[in-house]
Structures are given as structure tokens and as C-alpha cells.
Length: 599
Image (cartoon, rainbow, N blue to C red):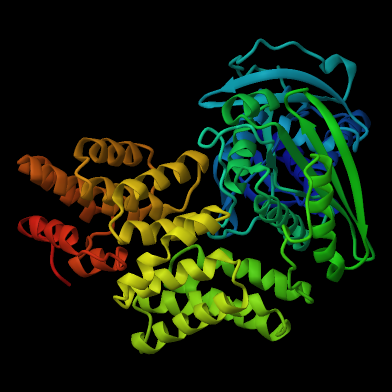
């Protein structure tokens, strides 16, 4: 720019035109630009890599055919990861790592993360140079260069800290291409990872999220559904330990190597897969790695033509995995599913869970509408009707109901009818227990505990069952179960955090409760409601200790989050199922001098 501002700008505009034309060709979406930097998302890893490679080639050809005073060079970084959508922009560590990879890249070069490399090797006509583990600022990741020419091969020291170099008259401009994998949030209905909790004499498996390689973002739900179905079906078999889907997301986000996965989680088998093709010719590819042997021990293809064939294919995949792991199965171990007959209904079902998991009024209303649409499209799916029990429950517990008594009765009736029709399904029993606690039918609710624990197959079941245990006053058992969930699931449901700390305080484990609350707040998870409750708990603990100055500080921090703070009524609503209200009333009474109101 200092040498020739107008020429630099003109060249940049030419480069930008080439880049945006390629975004259209490879279905990339530009979501942020700093003038001389471009952040884009792609529907697949392959399309991102091919777009970046073609961009560098076209730019090189353009310069060779035009005698320009200014020849701008670009670095490209490509990473795969989960993102947070903020209007049209994307945020999160996934985007940050793409930027770090860009700064690590060479001028006119492309550097990718291992998550991208694992997906594109053998699928693109490119050579790669393994750079090993690198660290840029606070991010550490395994990186690879894509070799567009032999001259680009280089050696970098482990965890090197790259510096930006002057390129003579050539300006060093940045492009960071980020592969955005759109995913659906859902409640933590993932299988219980028993690693480091139960004896490890059973084979264990971690199922990584299946990738959408169809090139169509509206097919994301296929891989999501297959992943969820595999985890659900495998967890039913008592001869296998299945890690949670949130563990898999965490592993992918952190770019753990196979060795790190084995060391951190004690996993024996790692399953990866992707979905390719289009309507009329879909293909699911699976690959299983034995981490003890450090080798791929099994791979298989499953083909289907139409989306309505997806559900029986999912069952075939699960059984094939069980067979490969030499687990003897019988028909009774995998329940006979009432398949979705409408793919559109299935998408509504998944999107509803995502909305419901937000635990907001808007999310709850959206979930209700989507579940109703799913039922209209697939009226014979008997299990789908149970979702309306959650809708009525949520209306009451979030104070959205115009007639709380009527809504709770509806929820209870649906839960009991579902239990009668599907006696092996634990979730309706857990919800029935919560409703019974709300209705003060304590004997019925607490009498369900042995069955709930025995039949819980996933973290959602265990979490809901444990809320019944906690509410009934079995504090030691509740604390143990909360700790199991948190240990096995890096990204457990938010409410587990404050309910666990409630249990510690109720059990008079004050020092442990203080330490836990402070550690979670230091993690800066920014869970507004959870953080507020943790500050209130700390205020109560310091008040009990007589440290009024600290108690006041914690109470003010709780208020500062939203400018209002919580009321006694809200505190009771958060723990609405408690059989004994003594602890909650004592907490509220102790904090009234600091400004806590009843309503």
C-alpha cells in the first residue's frame, strides 16, 4: 500500500472477484471480511480444500499472464469445527483455529488442520506435508501443508510460533477458509460414557459425528441422525461401553490424536463415517479403528436411494458394528423401533430437540410447533406423541402456562400412557417421577428410583432419574451420579452444574461446594442463569461462614449479570421438584438482607 496504493487496491479487487466466483462454484459463503481478509464457510471439507487450491492456482496464472507492479499473495487456513451463529456471522474456537492456521501458512500456501486432513486424504488430488503439532497463541493443533509445488515443503519445529515476514513489494494478505458444519442442539440425550467409572473389562467405543460430504447443507441431518441412532442402539447392549456424543464433539474440537483419545478416555474402538451422494444414490461409509492396535480393523459401505430408507439402514449399521465387535446380540436387545416414515418429520423432531434444549420461552414454543408438525406428518409414530408431555411440563415449570394444573395433568397422562405402551423405555418413567414430585405424590415418585437407575441407558435418562433421587433426599447417591455425568460428559447439560452444587450444600459439603462454584465461574462458561445461581450459592456459603463482605460481593455479582438478579420464586422454580423445601427457604431467608426479594 505504501508503494502504490491505487494499484494495490485494484489488484485486491481482482483477487476478491476470483475468490467470490470460486465461492459460488464450491458453495462457500463469505461471512466476514476485514478488507484484506476473508472468512468463509463450506458445506464439506473437500469443497473447501478444492476451492482454496484452485484459488491459489488461478491467482498464479493471472499473475503470469499480466505484468503487474503489485502481486498480492494470500495465505489460507482451513479447519473443521462447531460454530456459534450470530446473525450472519460465525463465532467460536473453530473460527479462531482457522485464523491461526492461516497465520501458520506460507505466502501463496494452504495449511489445514488434522480434522480436515482426515476427511480429504484420498479424496482430493493433492500432496500433503505433515507439520506435526503446532501452537499459535493459545491454540494448539496438528497441522498439514497442502503442497501446491515442491518448493513449499518445509520443516517446522513442534509448537513453533510463526512470525509474519515482509515479502518485498508483495503484500501479505490473509484468507481463512473455515468449514462450517451446521449441527442441531439437543438435550443431553447421549449414552453414558462409563470410562473411568465402571470396570473396563468390556469393549468401549467412541462414535465420531458423521460428516456430510453430499455438498448440500440441508443433508446435515442425515449424518446427525445416523450418529445419534448408532450411539442409542449400541448403548442398549450391556456388553459394550459407549462414550457420549458430547465427548466426541469435544474430541473433534480439540483435535485429539488417536493416542490422546486412548490415553484420556480409555477407548478401544473409534468409529468414523461420512455420508456422500444425493437423492437416488446415497452412500454411508464407516471405518473402525482399534486404538490398542493403532490400525483400521474394519470398513464398510451402506447404500440407499431415498431418504425414507434411512431408518432401516441405521439399524443395519448398528447391528453390523456390534457383529464386528464380536458381541452376540439377540433380537430382544435392540428394540423394535417405530420408524419415521417421513424424513421431513424426522428433521422436525431433531430441530425440536435443538430448540427445546435452549430452555428458553422462544425455544420451547418453537419445539412445540415443530413436534406438532412432525406428528402431523407421521401420525403413526407412537413414540413421537410422548414429546408433547415434555411440552406441557415445560409450560408449567417455565411459567408459560395459562392453566398449570391442566397442563401438568396432560403431561402426566401422556407419560403414564407411554409407560404402559413402552414398558422398557426409561424416559417416560423419569418424567412421570418429576411430575409426581411436583404434584407432591412423593411415595410414587421416590418408589420409582430403583427402576429408573436400572433402566437408564443414556445421560438424559440418568440426569432426569438423578433429579428424582436428589429431590427425594438421597443426597450421597445423587452427588455420586452427578459426578459420573460430569466426568463422562465434558459438555453436560447446564442445569447439572447448579443442581450438583445444591446437593453438596444440602449435604453440608461446604468447602467442596465453594471450590466447585469458583472453578466453574473461572471457566467463564457464560451460562447466565447458571452463573447467577452459583454466585447466589457462594453468597449463601459466605453468609453461613460469617463473611458478610464476601457474601455481599457474590450477591452483587449475581445481580450484575442481567441487572435484576433472581427472586425467591425463581430459585424455587429452578428446584421445583424438591420434596423438602427447608434448604431453599433457608438460602432465601439468609440472602434477604442483601436484597433478595420473594417475587
